[in-house]
Length: 427
Image 1 (cartoon, one colour):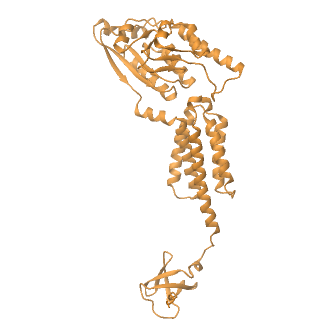
Image 2 (cartoon, one colour):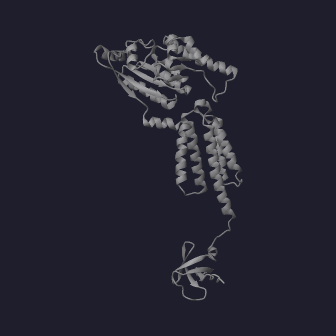
Image 3 (cartoon, rainbow, N blue to C red):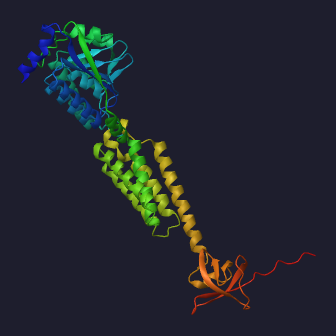
């Protein structure tokens, strides 16, 4: 399979034709969605016989699990994979530097940098001494082995982890951390033409005398999925889902709040499925939801709502702890959501308290004293309903006149009405 791919890749250069190169734009963090995007790109490069796949990289890093999956994809690829840190001003930090070390060719544009790959704890604070030594040594060995196999400077690669070192493009080239500095793609392809990747001796990068570049970027659908795993969006969707469901519980039959709440909750749960979450944070979020729901059934004078708001903020801040500091819910957003929910539930509680304090009005006796309008000789309109009626003094009822309900004859389901008291005369 590999040998066949090598023949296919060499053919365009030998025939003097234009070699095809697939360039994947990657200006994002490393996460499960962007992982799938890059792996799909590499698979397409293999399937369609491109001379090379270039990952145009600009990333602050991301999830270690996604980084390792991308590294494995690059190492197993049956097409040369080039990582090009570009354009000027870009960087390959943290997980990006490790992905670069796995590439068959690691190139940088001028005025770019690479490094700062020291692991950080889930919340950004320092590790305990023993745990730190274990994690840092593992990460240093990982990036160092990738550098060794690709003929790069192992010591400098390890220092990116152990010392959080970060190198500019020209210094990285001088120290043999990267293979090429290229101002543009023409320069890049000219320098790497004929390169045989150290870890893939059966493949040759054959860009020939001319190269056709096909650029691709993340599809709209993947961009939407990438947006939906933003921790702030996940927290917002979960809060909308909670509000919608609680409102539906308070007012069964409204349908709209329950529908919107259910959809928002499913969208939020997608983010929880994709990103690593803290069990403590998740339990606190569930407890916050329980507090708000209980407020609808237990008279606590707002104490449960306050407890729910506080628990929601703490749970939101802890929820994505295992994903690292790049995937944390903004404290400003968490507070804004909690205060909004507290305000909405406070408004609902105020309305409920007002309704409880109002006089109980049940049965037909509630109509006594209510104003009415005569609609026909024996019909009056009162409180949104038509009733049979007669006048208290036996006089005929004239349509259009205003009357007042005096009493209700339960046996005949008929109202007894009279003319309203005349307004007092002015003196």
